[in-house]
Image (cartoon, rainbow, N blue to C red):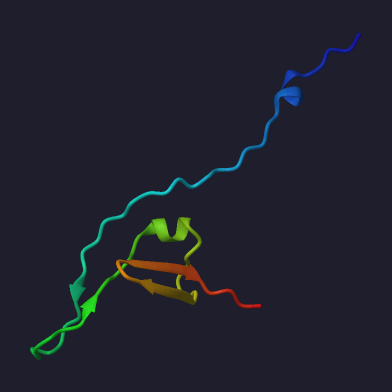
Length: 77
């Protein structure tokens, strides 16, 4: 009687699920050559962007709502 490999019976493929994580930034200002009323600026950076599918050079769409920014990859068909 041939023995069965327990490995083939227990092999399970799983995929990683990204849990929402908070990344904290502060709204700064764009240098305005000493002129009054500089523009607000928000700069996002980090390897976590790559992990979420945002790569250098990709186009994004920013949807603005009161108190919220939604950043999505721009789909090109």
